[in-house]
Length: 292
Length: 295
Ligand SMILES: [Zn+2]
Ligand SMILES: [Zn+2]
Image (tube, rainbow over all chains, first blue to last red; front, side, top):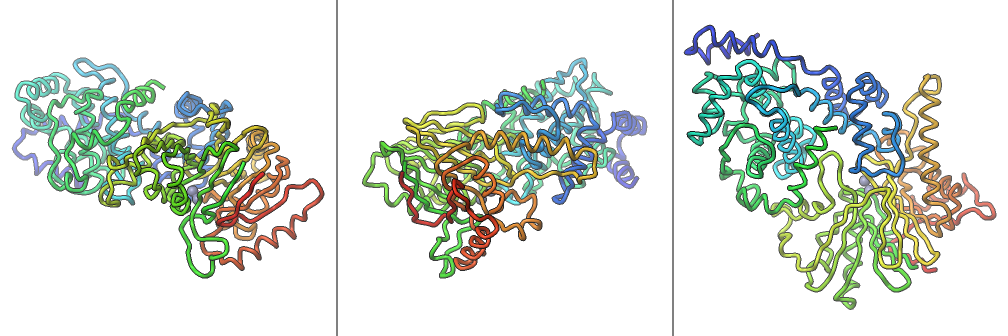
């Protein structure tokens, strides 16, 4: 409960009605899928029992179906058709199956339904490309970080927008328009019009979902100037995804890299993008992943 | 075909007086086709001494097959001299990583980040070509056919079979035979076992009859239980596979970095005692830095 109290005191200026609205919105969001939670737990445990992993995946027919579709796709071009999760485990090994299941399960958590004024498909594409770019570059900031964590953080960083899009679609559409007009970052327009931004409400949602603390902080702070390696990776990946027009998260502003990040990378955003090979394939792969 | 070992050590370079006979460099194998076409299996630290022998062949065209991107298999790449010399053609092949979507082209980019290495990728003056491989698409390198097969390791690891004018060799890269995750009295045990056997048959078919098989024999059977899931094989499992696939000879490699030369010879001779060689069985050897096989 304490986070809610913090949240009240921080937003003391807003009227009671609006605060309660936000909390209701978050409460009304679907729960984080149980299987995704379990797979996250198992993935974080280096001694995880393969039997448990197989069981969790097999009990979720959607994840099972998607995982099999993926391992049988052109991307892998395996010499044999994989027909079951156990088969995939023998063929691809525990680690690969674990990580694939984790990606699929987390993407499942994003509501796929159609919304007025908000293109969920474009949003997903932005989230997914940010995720895979973050995963790819995270070792530039800390070689010990788990790329899987960067993937999930990238995927979920803008989740708060889904809350607005579902429960306050008109005001959210206004915020997007305002950002376009003023060419200002979407989170500022959200603060002006809705009284809260998507990072903040995304943080609340992540708390409701009982995601790991680090992930909650990363989502909540992704528009703030905080310098953790994970935060830096998400920040840069987010700008790259926007710069290359991979999908659309409603934010027209591409932020320049802060000095400390340029220092780590040894170059600015455009040079960095140039130095990363095969980025153009990223969107295509992400599309494949969403459509599976 | 000619093979020369330039690095036979697993995990980390292990120089020193205790490893001086078998060598301390990590995985690198030079393969020469009959027309002298150069194929290099993995770019562990052994690739550096190899590359020092190459300048007489400049301008050179060579082909590096990467089994997987763990450090001990790529660590020497930024020191591969031909990369820096204009006119050379370096072809690098390997698997894309399905999790991060990192392509094979990113090995060098990752290694040459300015914090870790003083030379930038743009300063590599040779022509570098990357090609992603998949299991079901064999490729041609000169007169040779190269076939990749998915092995079992914490990251995607390809074993490579090279066939050329009736001669052939196979290298596992790092590989742990998949084990049954169920206990014999679990009801899933039998089904899982049959999947493992199917996969094993596919592996045998792929390796079938090669003249030379080079395999990850990191552990003894006594050491293995504590290392299960780490992605490496045992002498005994490789010997069994070599027999089943009716290969000509097996070279055991990926020696444990902590194993001295004496200890290595000891565990190998014990493996030989456990698995006495019968007529028509493969011949068994320890891979050794500098060792050449020519046939
Ligand atoms: Zn290795
Ligand atoms: Zn390895």
